[in-house]
Structures are given as C-alpha cells and as structure tokens.
Length: 392
Image 1 (cartoon, rainbow, N blue to C red):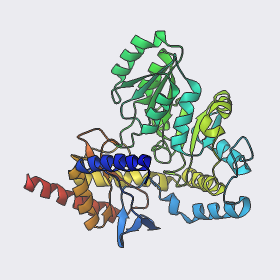
Image 2 (image 1 turned 135 degrees about the horizontal axis):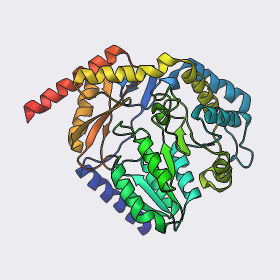
Image 3 (image 1 turned 180 degrees about the vertical axis):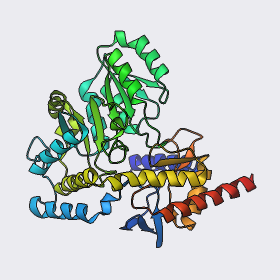
Image 4 (image 1 turned 30 degrees about the horizontal axis):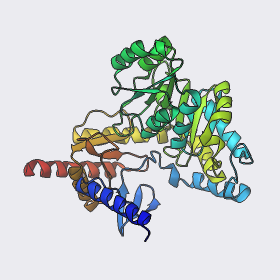
C-alpha cells in the first residue's frame, strides 16, 4: 500500500470510528419489494412505513407496464444529454403534461430532484445576489444556494417575521434575491406558509422557489402544496420530483417559458447530464394519469394519516409524514429495531439529516397501507412509548 493510500485508509477509519461513537454511521440494507407496502429485509417480511411512495404507484401494474413498453420502444437509456440526442418524444410530452398539471407555462425535466435544485438557483443568481432559505429546507436547496456564490441567509423555520427582517436589512444592497423553501417539509411534515411567503416575495422583488417534492400527488387535488390554499399560492419557480408520489424517478421545474428557456442553456446539471431513461418518463406519465383520474387514491394517504394520528393522540396531520421525535440517536435506533421485531420497517432519522437532539422515527403513510397496518403500527408505537416511560 502506498503512503497516500495508507493515509486515506487511516482518515476513513478515523471518521467512521467517530460516527460509531455518536451512533451516526449509516449502512445500506438489501430490501426487496414484495408488492403493495410489503418488503423483505434479512429474510423478514415487513410493512414498509418509511417510503416516499405515497400512492404506491411504483408497484402499480399500469405504471410498470408503461415503463416496460417504453423500454421496448425506445431502449433502456437515452444515450446522451438533452441538448445532444437525449430529447426523445416522451420527454417533451411529460414536460407539457407537468406544466398543465401545475398551472405553469413551461416545464423542464432533470435527472433527479437533487439535480434540479443544484441547477436552478446557480443558474439564476450569483455573486452580488441574495438567497434566503428556510432553516429546515431540504439539503439540496441548501447545496444549490451555496453553489450559486450568492450571499446566503438562513431564516427561522416558517418564520415570516425573521424572513421580512432579513429582507428589509439586506435586499436593497443586492442585485437579485431568491427565497427558497419546501412546500411540505420532508422531516416534519408541516407546510410552508406560502401565501405569506409569496406576499413578502412580491413586496421585496424576490423570486420564490418552492420544492414540492412531498406535496405533489397528495395535496391540492394532487397538484401540490400551492394548490391546497385558497386562492392557490403558486410560486414562479415550482420544483418537484417524479420519484415520490409518482413512483418513478427524476425531477422537474415548472416556470415561465422564458425561465425554462434560460435554464435549457445555463443549467449545468441539465446540459452536462444524460437525460432520463424512457422507462422513468413513461412511468411518470402513467402515474399522472392515475393521479388526475382517481380521487380516492389521492385522498387515501391523508385519510390513513388522520386515523393513525387519532390512535396515538397526535395532532391532526397536514401531510402523510408523521415525525415521532425521540431526541437521541440511540433512542431512535432502538425504537426502529423494536418496530422491525413487530413487523414494520421504519428507519431511524439522525443528525445531520435533522438537527441535533431531534433524532426521530419518520412515519410515512401510503395509499398501499391498510387500516389494519395503521392500527397495528399505532399499537406498536404505543407499546414502545410505555416501555420507554417505564424505564425512565
């Protein structure tokens, strides 16, 4: 082993040891989907209660058949970036459908939600500009903000007073400004106060980017968080993914035609990345058909979420994401193991994904779950709660 390799190995081993001491080391586990909400891990059949497949569409036969047929027609991959030869017909159809669905002029599809948020902010702002971002916004929004080179200010979670204070103090000295937030916050399940946020954006001439990865398909008749308000609160930059409620893979931005045209030339994760495979695009199109046509499917996750929270005496949920905050990483890991013994897959969420002292179980409820699943999970969590209280 060369000295350089030896120093790299020592570095990695030291970092891993530190993570182990804090119960923060991540591991991957082979998990086989069995259909519906069932998976198999380590030879055990489990009810998956931590997936983002909110409508169960990744396992839907219509979605699967659409992906199969597209592969047979167009091939397994796209072959190049969108600007070379990767712009096959399904991609243009999907962008047109998403624009109509979200109520925008145009849409641009990217390779993933993470890539979308790495692309948009750096393409629109840079040094001399200002980006204000919610403290609990997704990591990829924060990464895109830092990558832009603009001044980045983090405002308190959903704190419109803090946001207005920072805008008042800083906006006049900056050329352009953006406000970045989730629509549904992925770890807490609460909603951004979009009407108030968009009012501030208009007052200070700031461009709002809303990451609605966890709202589309569920809220606002499936059209997302902004459509759940009356009147709708639609940001000029509406970002989302194809990988959650739509059961496929990819990301997108819905915006004006001029903004999308600009990004087609300036968004590096679009220009320099191979386009999505046909199967993913066709699957998303089929999922959109189901979301638009099946009201009962769209409404089921929230119906089950309300049932689940009522069983546990929790506040009425605003999304299918239910956080059970336990505090320490070891407490979350122990609760996750206990739930697995009871037949449920619920991952422990630990820092840095969530702030220090807020390690948790993140329950996500899907249309693929049954009422019995929710009742059994609530009973298992109640048992864990009682055991923990007795030990204290």
